[in-house]
Length: 471
Image (cartoon, rainbow, N blue to C red; front, top):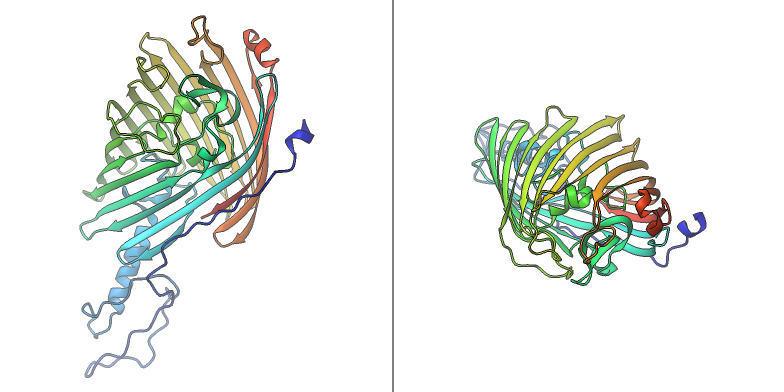
């Protein structure tokens, strides 16, 4: 197994992320001497903020002595404050995860930042080249590229409101419509006719195109609106590729279609209200999951709805409970609707000057039109003692009727299956915002006796990968 798992890669991948150049000078220029009769020092005092980006001085907004210094310092303080707060409200940007979801305030926030005029830009990227191996009669091997490129543009207004645009792209469609091998996974289709089983489907080329507008009402309250085509409605914990406890693993969770598969829907509109660490939000969205064409933009149809309550009681914790009424989510079952429930708790803490530890416990339930329910549980954790090493693990358990077909070709009997995986990645910093990493993981699947003939017992699998991170 080890020889096959650590087989050499067939190629390499390169990624370039371009951001708008900063319109600001990175060095602070002293204010010129003011006209007489007001005296000024020949050499202004040293600026403790020298070297920071800041807006250019405005000649019509001067200090009492005639120089632009006060305007510079005020604008700079405002810019630094904006860089630290969320575009959806007056809380730390580190609280933001995918869509409008929350994570603990002590979470990591990465990205390359730049400014141009009144706009602030942020971008980051992760690209994985992965060799995947899954054992047993239903296993397979594949080398593929996954990851995402994400960017945002933000403008803050004098009245305290914020406009934000965000886009996210994925290279996953290039791996092919049948995705990559992942035992016990099911959901969606590769050809529009047969279910995709024991494989993880690729995500769309365009994973998010969204806009949001937020308005601060008081020191404790704010409201926001979010629209996306595609985007993420108010349901579940953050999507797995955005959770700190999961983002270092190239393996998708088999609980994906219970907890966070709605992270990419073609058409979503969300309204939310926030009071300090408490948030209520509701969404209208298209319930149908994306079809097998991963390159197009599908037409929006707001036929489903969801609601989510989130609470960050302290910087270390983020809790959420959510409900969704989803119209015809599965392409192969257009007459079958679902209701979904989700609850999760995410914990994060800092380890020394550079380290962190993040864990997620989540539960999801799907209920079909006949009242049949299927539950899923997830526990995952990741520890990074410094910026070189990250160790991650995940345990999952799902109730599923999609692994073996029924007599008429539809869903079969309900089975409870489980999966556990463990891995690590080592990074080398190539530049201030660029890291290259090499990692591997091992997974073990457990199936009930009725599924053992199909899977050859309890099969295992693994992945080796190299990655490039910018941000």
